[in-house]
Amino acid sequence: MAKVLFVNPLMREEDDPRHVPYGMALLAAIVVGQGHRVQVYDHNAWRPSDAVIAQVLQADRWDVVALGGITTAYRSIKQIVEMAKALCPQALVVAGGGFLTSMPHDIMRFLPRIDVGVVGEAFVSFPELLRRVDAGNRDWAAVPGLIWRDAAGKTRLNPEQPLLMDLDSLPYPAWELFPLEVYFKNSMALYSEEGMLAQRRLDINASYGCSLICRFCFHLGIAGDMQHKENDEGENDVAFTYDRKIRFHSPRYVVNLVKYARERFGVDFIGFLDENLMTMHQFSGKKWLTDIAKLWIEEGLQPQCVRDGVPHDPAKCSGVHWGGTSHATLCSPEVLRAIKQAGCSHLVYGYESFSARVMKTIGKGATPETNERSLKWTLEAGIRPIPNQMMGFPDEDFDSLKDNIRAWNRLGLNVKPFFATPYPGTEWYYANKQRILEQYDGDLEAFLLDLGDATRVTAVISKKFNAVELYGLRELMVLRDIARIERYEKEWNRLHAADPPPPPAPRLVLETKR
Image (tube, rainbow, N blue to C red; front, side, top):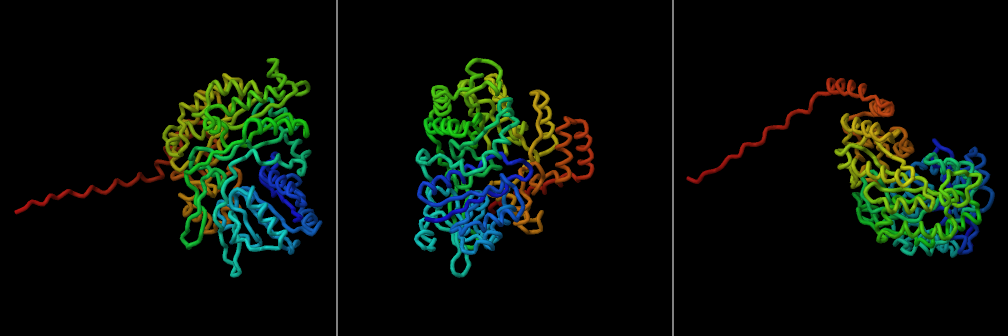
């Protein structure tokens, strides 16, 4: 059986390692269950010198070195791919995840040391690849979901791999292969008191995808959004659409998985990585989250402090607290009260903006009114709402910035917005690609190397403001300094000529018959 080394690249240089890579842990469990010999090197957790990476790559005669991640891990992935091919010439270097799926031909061109890429969901494609490695069969053309190089070096993208619809057929993640002591040390999540005091947190994915069409968001092949179409070069390529296939684990699977994590690893907090828990609740006939909450309590996972109605004390509290994601238009007081009783301590809301005009342009389906309503309902249920916001939208202006500050003042919110960022795979990326390239002198890879977690400006997509202005305006927003924003607005208007008037409409001339 194949000898496989999984490498988890550096994900967020700006932060400590906080999240075991869930997809990689699932893939590892799948291939271990099929008899393959698996080791994991978690570069994101250890963050050592290049010499240590080299030692790991040379520690055995690997048949496959597999790595992947989101686009913000591109710099680290590039380095590891180069080292893997140089130090393990016998190994097949396989890459997957969002960074590759969003632009497979480009990534294979930028990283010629990748032998094979897994595009979209890997649950079926990657095990099939390993079966072919075992058989000595390097004919990749017959395996859906792969991108590879032909004899002439040209990249070939195979047809899509159908999504796995029965998610409950998946094994539990192979968490034990990762350095949990590193992740447990960084368990605290500054979202709620219970999250801040967590000492042994693990994360789970209970669902895949989201029904919404937010123009800043990507799903990258796990939500039924990906299709294959011919690109301008005549190649089979990926295209991302509004199509959706909503998939979620059964409440029984979810609760049993949490019980397993509690019994084996002693977890005291679970973070739901799902894009939008409320989407799944809606698609299940408004039963999914309430059924999870009911089972959570029946199976003894309800936190003691919630059960007894007392303040949380980590030294005394048994059970498992948790947090996840919500949506302003899909939540309800009833479901919020139910999940609070099961130990939900916080919910992250993508409020994005409190400008009605901006909200209409981003495809989210929410309004400032639904944002405020969900905030009120969540607080009344005893759950901490976490408002995620952005600034620098394509149609951002001074009025929309001030709308946000006034809402923060009215609602008592403290927010430092992220910068609107056109990540590959989003509608923003495709709509602004030419403008992105212009900001990086035509070098797409330079843009990938620059991408981070949206706490700093990369490619600007605002029609009105440049990068310097965005930094300054965000600082004034955080300080609630509307007066200085208005003074700069006057200066901005003085420096920028008004839009030229539209040309006169052509005169309508009526012919008369003579």
